[in-house]
Amino acid sequence: MEIQPVNLQEIVGVTLGMLVVLIPVFGATVRFAARPLVEALLQAGVIGPRTQAATESELGRLSRRVLELEQELQRRKLEAIVPVSAEPSRSVELQRPHLID
Image (cartoon, helix red, strand yellow):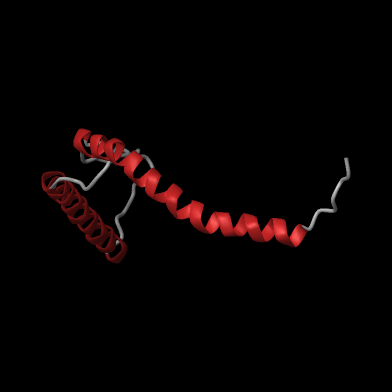
């Protein structure tokens, strides 16, 4: 049995020619095969757009936080303008930050 020399250019050409056809076929197959899975995840609420109610509640929480931050900023600006006299014998109480849910 005689062994023929391998022509690398022909092998690469045939492989690329097959890939031109196989890649779109594979993509279409995956798209149609994954569609039921994606629809099930959308229906379960795992993926997909957020509901309008969740967005409005987040907006309300963020609005309250911004308002509190603005009030805190105003309070600190006033303290910077009018220095508060701190007595050395008096202990300063630290306030816990109020977290908004």
